[in-house]
Length: 260
Ligand SMILES: NC(=O)c1ccc[n+]([C@@H]2O[C@H](COP(=O)([O-])OP(=O)(O)OC[C@H]3O[C@@H](n4cnc5c(N)ncnc54)[C@H](OP(=O)(O)O)[C@@H]3O)[C@@H](O)[C@H]2O)c1
Image 1 (cartoon, helix red, strand yellow):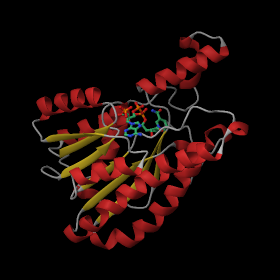
Image 2 (spheres, rainbow, N blue to C red; image 1 turned 120 degrees about the vertical axis):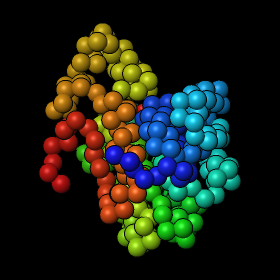
Image 3 (cartoon, helix red, strand yellow; image 1 turned 90 degrees about the vertical axis):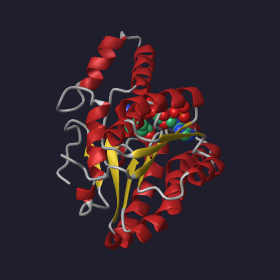
Image 4 (tube, protein in one colour; image 1 turned 30 degrees about the horizontal axis):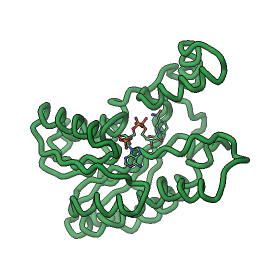
């Protein structure tokens, strides 16, 4: 299926590894030019070079920290008129005990997971409206639909973001600008592996056993592949996807038990 976006420009955040890198590859495969962002310049430039050589699209990079306002400004300055914006990549500080969360932890989480995407969206949406094409996707988490206390530092700002996205979606829909959130379940990325290792160490169990136990938490009984996630994201960015907006779409191998 031709997604009808060849020649368009996309900002992809968190594009050096994991889900964001898979999304950057999926868009490049459709002929989309990229501005890729992450903090570690060496890893980012390697990922960008790989995409350039495989797909022949234009790929620029900005190595910056999006959890602070200056990083968002720097990214927007590098590409003021994208057709596509993917916000992805933020992780909360690894602090599972809610009793120890401080005001500073909350401020950092809100900045990274709610204000960062809102600032980026505000920076690009007016241009998309003027050009009568825009596709915005925010990558959040399945826990937005099934909150767990130990993840509240990330779920709370992401639910705040969902409120903003839901309202904005209705405002911008008449201009062929859509905004949706993708809610991943467990996907096989390096960071997910590191998390699995930390769980195994904490439980004093072998990694294989912990990994298998985590796989069995969804109906498909496996981790998702980043390419599976990326192909849905690329479709949401397609010319054909103009009639779906304001949605929080779970992709988790059937783990979420609800109908709605
Ligand atoms: N994988 C899963 O199973 C899963 C499940 C639920 C939700 N999610 C969410 O999905 C997103 C992607 O997950 P992932 O597993 O693909 O993560 P990942 O492999 O750790 O990749 C994260 C990407 O974001 C970049 N990044 C992180 N913090 C950044 C910052 N402050 N500023 C700019 N770039 C930043 C990282 O590069 P640098 O480190 O070099 O900056 C990297 O490119 C995350 O927000 C995560 O919370 C993932």
